[in-house]
Image 1: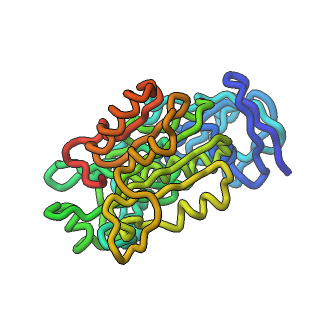
Image 2: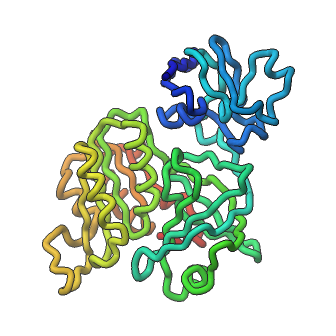
Image 3: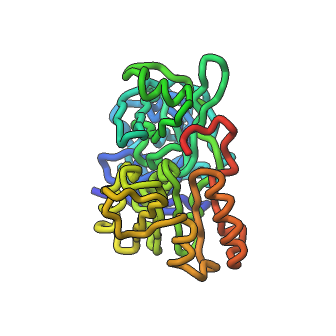
Length: 340
């Protein structure tokens, strides 16, 4: 059985199955309700049931008898028992998401290529981090220094936090990650950070241009766009030196099979003889301009080395692209940025 859930204030609505929480149903539909622990303790997901009925597997610890008497519910635990109208403060702006410092555990390490490690972090059981696709986090070292890494997963898939970390020659911290970091290790993070996020309400087609592990936040954005059913053309350009630097080559190809409006173009700046490469070569932003000589009616998302982003930004503006249609993470990160 599925029920219709309406939010009169914003006119958003979505369907919720009787065996899923209202929060899960909302996030699946791309409606951003507030949440914190997702365990019914913190109360961040509290809202009012205006019409209809909800039920719980067990009454959550953060829901008092007085709150229930006044028709308040904790939507991370509440399940629809009828069609509903609810009142809750939707999260539609970055400023509404609370930045937290918290411990995390290294749950899994996976070397994706010769110089890229995928690190999965597990938050404490009572905490779930709310974030927008494209944001980043800081790992806080024992000496107080912050190291910034893009979040590579989409908000709906938040059981683990995924990072793509490139080994930097002479980089002390990335060398530690590759050589000495252990599963089960505790890291302290600050998150979520940054304003590099999707403009979901824009009707314009999207160009996404990544360099190296600048692919990471674009991956999160695309997986979020696919999840919410964003129906518009999206073209990913991924620039790397040689073929071995395409550290997840099969994933974008799979996206092209599953999503007819999505295109993928890898670009190699220094292809090697063994690559047998017959695809695009050179600078990735020049390849973008080759495919789209007129980008004035497109939104452009750029992630990667600052020099790449700055050069692309200047050229795109020269071609008449409005600054409000250019989105980038290059301006967000401090000098300790290790993932680009």
